[in-house]
Amino acid sequence: MATFTRTLLFAAELVEEDGAHILLDEDVPCGTIQSIPVSKGMVDKLPVYLSALVAKLNPPSQGCR
Image (tube, rainbow, N blue to C red; front, side, top):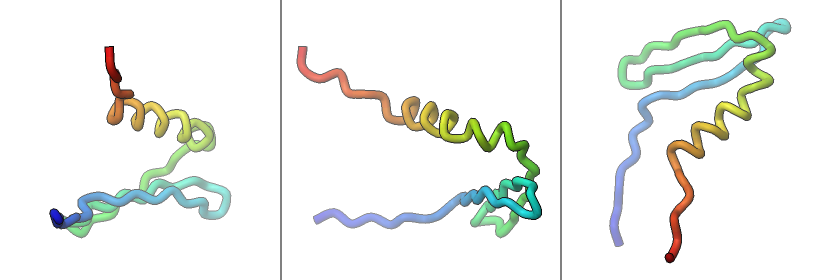
């Protein structure tokens, strides 16, 4: 059985603080965190962006022809 090691490189959290949305972006190896304000409109569109990213990274297989 094959074994592998996972190393966390980046982590992101979207939080709401006093009605404002903030993206916390952590560069784990460097130990740095960026705090980025995000508009409500962008938060509402996030599921669409994530779906597009997943589709681009994992294209459907072609199957048999």
